[in-house]
Amino acid sequence: MAYETIIYEVGDGVGTITLNRPGKLNAFNDLMIDETTDAFKSAGRDAAVRCVVITGAGRGFSSGQDLGDFQERGEGISIGEHLRHGYHRLIRQMVSLEKPVVGAINGIAAGAGCGVALAADIRIAADSASFMLAFSRIGLIPDSGINWFLPRLIGYARAYEMAITADRVPAGKALEWGMVNQVVPTDQLPEISAAWARRFAVGPTLAYGLTKRAMNRSWDSTLDEALEYEAHIQGIAARSHDNREGISAFLEKRDAQFTGR
Image 1 (tube, rainbow, N blue to C red):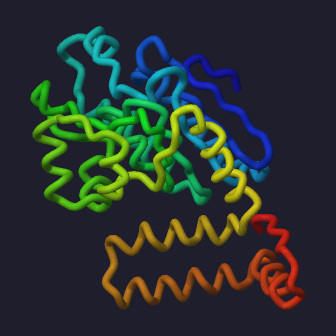
Image 2 (image 1 turned 45 degrees about the vertical axis):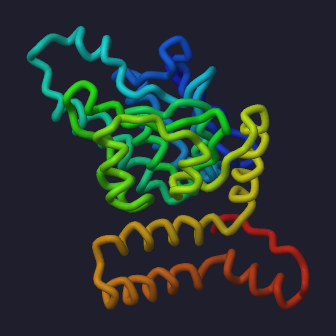
């Protein structure tokens, strides 16, 4: 499928989604939300894709919602319905995708753009990147999953501080707070994030996906429920080709050749 607002490429087991409205700092309009959601859906259906990278073209990851585009629809537009039929679909698609999602955060991730970044499983930030919740500046609350993701990553006090001050959090502080996994020189971000993705693409990707499923479910589980679900998921993993290959490789003292099955 040809896209207008994103670039989607597949190679070496990795699907790369590049948000591509650089003149708008990759602000999301309806089309870009729909196309990004569709690309994640395609990645989920494609057995050749075993890891997904999402990044931005130009100087920013995403500045969030394109407010000009939103205002053009007039006063009758419901922001709640906009979220339900737009960003919520995208966030759910990212979280439910049972393949690792690497966010290569190349610049500002603001507003809904921050929500999309936080929905990635692994976040690699350029040292020039920053995160910002600008919602309070226009009298709104954080959305796009931020109220769920951010307190879990950095704690309530820091998350609430970000929400009500709307201050930028630079990459170094984001790393200190646990918002990102690694900070790298800006010019090395594509190479380093690609290396992370290639590592996942040749790994036991079925187990990676099942791990993601178990961890997401655990947020709403008691310990006993989490233990029982863990045993259920482990049973699935134990019947996989990758498990058999991993055990054989360990016993034969060789590198495992995983297929994601």
